[in-house]
Image (cartoon, rainbow, N blue to C red; front, side, top):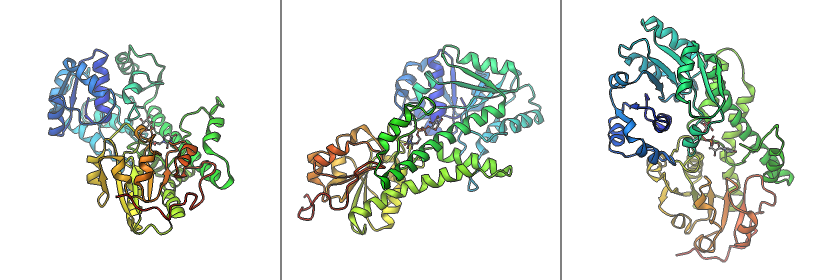
Length: 438
Ligand code: UDX
C-alpha cells in the first residue's frame, strides 16, 4: 500500500484481514512511527480493531524499496487534492513513479486514488518510456465512505477493475476473492470515469434535494416527507436524499470540480455540475439567513456550532460546512463557539477565532442560537430542558434535520430545520424576559 491515509490504511487493514501480507509505505515519519507503535492516526470505526487483529500480517515502512522487496502488487493510495485551477494535483502520483525501484515483471501498480480520466494512459506511457513496460497497471477505484469505510470494503456494492491486460485484472480480482460482490471489468478510462461519475451523481442528488428543500420552505411542503415519498420509487431509491447544509469532505467537492474541469479542458461545458457546485455553496450560507431571520443583527450574538467534522463518525474537517459557517458568522461580528466529539484538535488549527468547547452544554451556555452542523448521534437529545435553561435564547437551527421539530417546540425551543413544514416564525417562543444563564 503506497500511502497510509484514509484509503490506504483501511484498504491495508482489510486486505490483511482477508489473510494477505501487507506492507504499508508512507512518507511521513511520525505517521509510520505511530502505526508501528500501534497508534491509529485517524478516527474510523472498526479500523483500530482490524489493525490490531491483523498485526502479524501488516508492516509499516518509510522506504519504497522495502515495499517492493516484499510485495508484487502495489496499490497507489496517495492524495490527489485540487489545484487552484480545479484540476486534480497528480504530483504525488508522479512522485510514486519517480521512486519506483528496479522491479521485476510481476510488479503491478493498482491505482486506488481518484484521478482524472486519461491518467492511466499517461502512467502507462510513462512506465513504457522508462523501460518499465513489464510493470502492469490497473485502475481499481475506491468507494469507501468515511465512517463506514471498513464495512464498505468488506461488503461493497461492486468492485471496479479497469485494466490494459486481462491477466492483470485477474490478479487484482483474485485479491478480493473471499468478498462477494459483482466485479465490473472495464477499460482503464471507464474505470476512472465510473469513480468520478458516481461521486458527481451522488453530489447532484444532494444538491437536488437541497433545492427541493428550499422550495418546500416557500411552498409549505416538508422535504422529509417528500424524500420518503420519492425514495420508495425503485427507480430513485432512498439514498442521498437527505436535505441539509450541503456536502463536504475530501471527495465530493474535489471530484465534482475535477470532473467539471476535466470536461472543460476537453472543450465541454458541464452545465449541470456548475449548478451542483453553486447550490452547495449557497446551501452552507443559508443558515446565516435563518439565524438573521430570528435574531436580526448577528453582531454581538453568540452562536454555537454543534458538530464540526464534515459528517459524523470521522474527525475529517476537509471542506466541512462548519468552516464556511464559522467564517461567515465571524465576519458578521458574532461570537462563535464550536463543539465536536472527535475533531476539536483538528478544529484548533482551522477555526481561528472560534471558541472550542469540550461539551455541548458549555457551547450553548449563554448562546443566542445552537446550530446542528453535523448529525452526531450525541446531538439527538439537544432539545432538553438543561440546554434550554442554559441558552440565552432557545433557538435551534437544525442544519441536518436531526431533531423532531414537535419535540423541540414542546421543550420550549424555537425550531428551524431545512425544508421542513412549519418552520417557526421569528419570536415564536417568547424570550425577551429571559435572563442569560450564569
Ligand atoms: C464519498 C462517497 O460516498 C464514497 O463512495 C467516495 O469514495 C468518497 O466520497 P464521503 O465523502 O466519506 O464518501 O461521505 P458521504 O457519506 O458520501 O457524504 C458526503 C457528504 O455529503 C457529507 O458532507 C454528507 O453530510 C453529505 N450528504 C450525504 C448529504 O448532505 N445528504 C445526503 O443525503 C448524503
